[in-house]
Amino acid sequence: MWPSWIVVGFVLMLAVVGVVPSAWAEKGGATGSEQAVATAAKRAATEKSGKTIDAKSGISSDKKTTGKKKRKRPPPLVTLATVHLSHDGPVTTALGTVITRQQAQVASRVAGWVETVHVEAGNRVRAGDLLVTLDGSEVAHTLAMRRATVREAEAKLLLAKTQRERDTTLKKRSVVTASRVKVTEAEEAIQQAMLDQARAQLALTTDLSKRYRITAPFAGVVTARSVEAGEWLRQGDPVVTLVNTGRVELKVPLPESIAGTLKAGQRARATRRGAGEGGAVAVRLRAAPATIDPVTRNRLTYWRFETLSLPTGRPRPGHDMRLILPSKSKKARLLVHKDALLGPENRRRVFVLKRANTVQPVTVRTGIAVGSHYVVHEGLSEGDRVVVLGNERLRPGQTVRLANGDKRIKGGDRGDKNGGDSGNAAEKSGDAAQGGQR
Image (cartoon, rainbow, N blue to C red; front, side, top):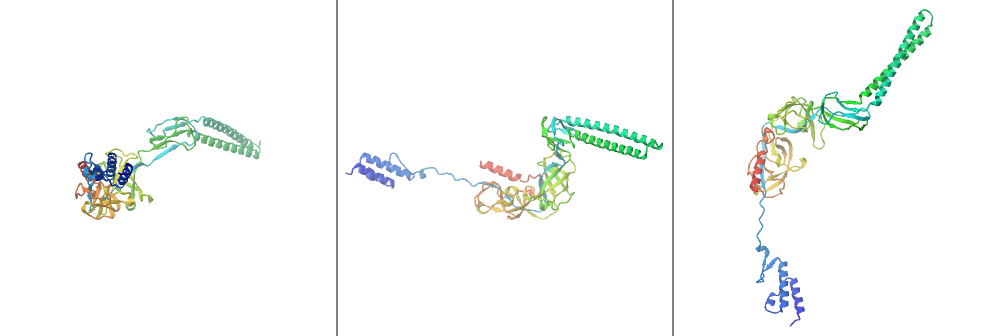
């Protein structure tokens, strides 16, 4: 009989390599302690291999075969739209902003202490209304001195004039010489110049004193107040921001391909976002400067309102408005729905449905916006089905489920006739599909 410590060491070595002499242990070839060690080694080996041991029978089984199988995640649900040709007269829409043609930061023309601020942000003022008063006690004393100087100069001029008239009379009587008359005439001229200088200094000081009362240069609304009473103002420091809300226009960035064809005076329509064409107002192009933004490659265009009476209310600076610009071109154009486009403008791509309901990304080059669609120049063909809802997390070659089959989203080929909401069909279909999935 082998010593027990040798048997235990041998069993542990076999347990490490995954072999346990279970049959030998069951036949009684080992003592009780040796059998316990063998059983423990066998359990460790089976747990390491992913199997379980029945407590009564000691029979091992695979855990993976006894557990429940995990459910396979279904393919993502997507909504499709069809790339199609537009044969109707195109309508270009672009988002713009109402701006004021007259806005100023009213500044102080002199340095001084702020004595009183007469307006608050939001106050409407008229031209000439008092905005801020500065401490003008010093200039008031200077003004009094200038006035006294003028009075002194006037008195000296009167005296010189009297002396000149007296000498002229005496010369006729041969009492004074002609040279004496010339001296008095020169003295009168000198005093006249001194009076003119004093009056000019008085006018300058008077104008300076008015600058201590800062007034509104035009009628408008105070949008910001920059000073408080007691502050020291330097020359040129702003005190309030004034906006003329009665002189507004629409600023719209447009692609160079469109802005380059516009002419001053060309008419279009503008509407508040979400108001539709029923709330449109006529606008006329004022200017389209040739400067192109290096990032967006757009040109700014400025449109004057023919009337400021809109059904949605008077346009105010900062309002968003949509420009509706009809085109005379009747050329058919390929359109893709805006919701299908992913990525930045210079690297746009779409997911196109392929065979066996798989999708593949395709890089496209797009043009101007036409309602809820974009003109396609490269990358797609008529009839291609693209994903417009559920395309955010798709992978190349991924299998998908179709929420709308071969449904075609219409409306974009007619421009923005429904106020730019031609993509609602896709959105509603996608919402319904997501609701069914939940």
